[in-house]
Amino acid sequence: MAEANKSDVKSPMTEEERLELCQKLDKELDDFIDSLEKRRYTEGWPEDRWEEEMDKHPFFMKSTPENGELSPLAEGLANLKFDPEENTPVELASNYKEDGNFNFKHKNYRLAILGYTEGIKQRCDNAEINASLYNNRAAAHWHLKNFRSALGDSEKALSFSSNHTKAKIRAAKSAFQIAKYQTCIKYCEEILENTKDKDISELLSNAKKKKIIMERDQRKQARNIQNITEQKDAVLKAIIERGIKISNCDDEDDIDLSKLEPSLPGAHDAIVHVEDGLLKWPVLFLYPEYQMTDFVRGCPENVPLSCQLEQLFPAPWDEKNKYSVASVNIYFEGYDKMPHVIDPSKNLGDLLVAKYFELRAGTPAFFVLPRGSKIESRFLENYI
Image (cartoon, rainbow, N blue to C red; front, top):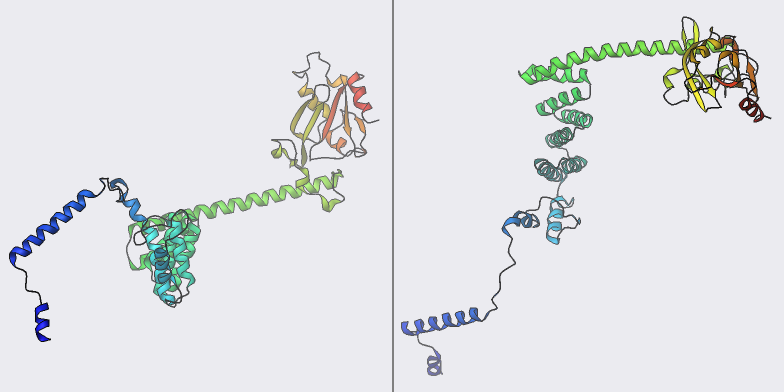
C-alpha cells in the first residue's frame, strides 16, 4: 500500500516544462482576446460629465435626486445616520448640524435651514450644540435676507451661550436691518465692552443716528395723526350741527368719514374738510345731454352754487352756447327718488339741508339741463 502511494506523487516540474506551460497559457489568452468582438467601451464616465456621474453615487451625492428617490444604499446610509433608535439626541443634533453645514457651504441656505431645524427639534441637552444650531440657522436666514428670523435665532443662540460673539454680532446687524435700533445699540455696546471692533463701532454710531431720526419721525407722525383725528372730529361735528342728511346713516352715531369719501376715481383726496370754520365740499355737476361731468374740489358752503357754474361756463363742449347760469335748471335727486329743482343763487350749505336732499358718497351731485329743452323733458319723464 505504501508503495502504491509513492507512485502517485508527481515529481516537480523542470524549468523547461514550466517555460513551455507559460508559453501555452499566453497563446491561449491571446487567442481568447482576438476572438472577442471588437467594440468601443462605453461604460465609463465621460470626461466632461464625471462630476455629474460621481454625484449620483451615494457616497458622493450632494443633493437628493430630482425624482426624490434614493438608492437602497443611500437610503440605508441616511437611516443609519439619522435613525433615532441608532443615535442619541446629541448625536442626532450633531448629524443634522453637519447636514446643515454641508448645504450652507454649498449655498443651499433653505436646505441648510431645514437641517438645522431638525437638529433643534431633537431637544438635546448640549448647550453648545444648541447654540451652534441656532447661530448657524441665523446665518442661513441672514443670507436669505430674513433679518427678523436671523435676529430671533441669534437671540435664541445667546440664551444657550450668552458670550457667543458671532451670534451677538449677527443679532446687532439683524436688528439694524429691521429698524430695531435700540436692540442693535444694546448688542453693539456689549460687544465693545470686550473688544475693539471698527465695524461694530460704526454700526453703533449709525444705529444711534437712525434711532434719533426714527423717534423724530414717530413724534411727527403722532402729531399728524392727532391733527387728522381733530380734523375728522371737526368735520363730523359740523355736519351734525348743520343737520345734513347722510345716505345709509340712521342717526348721528352712524356717521363716519368712510361714508363721506368720494367714490369717483382719483377723487379720494377731495373729501370734505373744515377750513377756517367752514365746510368745503367736493361737488359734481352732471350734464346728461352730453354725458359729461365737472368735478370741483373744495367748494365753500357759504358760496352760491351759481358762482361755481360761472367759473365752468362757457364749457368747451357746448358749441351752441346753450349752457349759462341764466339758461339752465339745476336738479338734485332726493331720497324720495324724485328730481328737485334748486335756486342756484342759494349758498351750497343751504342746499345741503334742503328738504329731500341726501348726501351720497360724500359728494353733492347736481344735474344741469337747458331750461325748457327736450333733454330736460326726457330727464323728468324718467322719474314719472
